[in-house]
Image (cartoon, rainbow, N blue to C red):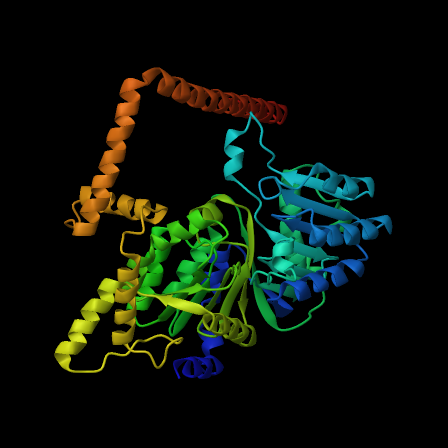
Length: 518
């Protein structure tokens, strides 16, 4: 059984692998050096994870920092509100930071209960006319930090989806509990985002990793994603470049930027077992379509793609060579990697990496591997010519044959009897096709010609709309560009005035010191 062989491979650790891991390079990619002396445990079940959070909050003595993209006004959100309110009434400082976009549906009455109990509540990047670009930057972190001694980081939001109901199982997610100096480093990351939305955390309540006692022997990189920093982007590329045996990734909204996809493809092409697990039934269907638009390049590069068949898998994890793992809030797409505030932890620990690989293999048992029909057809014909029995390399169907899979796909096509219709994935592929053709990289195949022709028709339709309704189009364009222009101009003027004021202050100080201000 291939699944059994995979499990046996997880249990084998290369001797001396920890010593050869590029720690210094990871320090640079992650934006901060590893914090040593920690103990970590994996969390992968929503109800048990929430119980651990509540238990830690109940034991708080100095402070509670609670930051999450989504807090819902449902039975789960109300339980956390009650726990945080109770702690605030005991005199423990409690701070709650939530994202406006993530919590747009949470009513105002939910937050009123916090404020009435003395909890400090701040909303991240509420929309404003003076800041139209703010909607592009979200606080997507999921962090609970208590006293700087324990922290919880991962993908769990606060809502009934992650706890489940009697009729619906909980979403599959992954997080980690951190005890040790890295918990204080996570609290520091909360303090930095908190200060962006108002007054900073008082000095006497600031956490310091140097003051925390050692709790274990695991080094942890606290990776603070922020707009324009691309830290997880860099760490994934570094890990892909250094992986020797395997790199397994779980991601719910996988629309990888081209450099990341190429790094994964290059690793697979070099013999690394690269697997990516995504949900088959995405809670944002259009993101699932975008993700599928990039399947072909990855599969042709040797990457193996799997779709989880459960209600939703929301975990954001990576694990390489049974040695290094990442757990956090970052999705592998441009919005998350380049535009949001995120929080992930990188961990250099064989035991924890093996747990992540075990979870990955367990999830594969409820997944289906994605293959390209044309790729299988070419293999099938090649095997026929060679006179060998074609076998399907997939852990879920160790007894299956390529012939059986090919026949099943052909039968399904005949039953459908028609094209599945136009999807967003086709738009993505059409964009890639247009770019490669314009760059003169390759000629068009039949499918590409159809897609490119459809895009051409869309452009012609837009041109006709502009021709027959120029006033409507002009008003829309004028309104949007005028608004953006005014806001951008005002920002530029404010920056100019601030720079002039700082320059004047510097000249004044220099002249008082007896220097020549010229």
